[in-house]
Amino acid sequence: MDKMKKVFIVWAVFLILIFTMLTAFGFFYKNKISNYRKLEEKIVDAEKKYVDAKFLYPTEGNRLLTDSTELIENGFLDHLQNGNETCDGYAEVTMKGKVYQYKGYIKCEKYKTKNYKK
Image 1 (cartoon, rainbow, N blue to C red):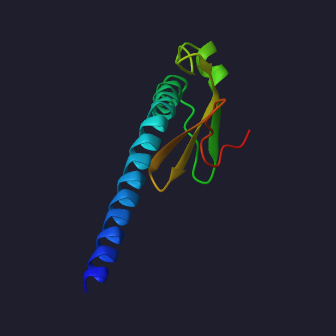
Image 2: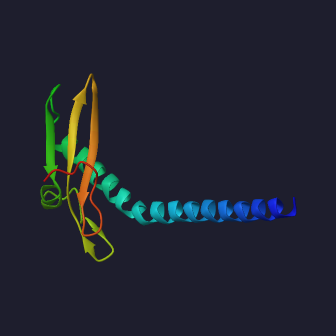
Image 3: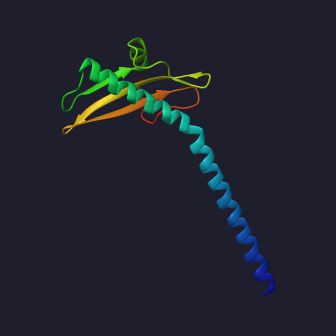
């Protein structure tokens, strides 16, 4: 029975270490991409202002794509950077029902939004 106790303790310590490492990795990864998520939100905010100012709302089934360069040139976005890393991106507006949906896409040296197509 003494041997079983030792095996149980070794397994318990092993599982605690694995759980701790996975949790730490999750927090590290979330922290790492949070700045990129802010850039995606930033390009969406700029797109909302751009669409409102130019009255470019898409109709049902259509979509509007606006490049970050166009948003910068028109003064709706100042830059698209994460630290020293300059990113490229675009925003997409679609209409579903009576609701406009906005999505920001960015491509940086170390990060790319899922489904980025450009």
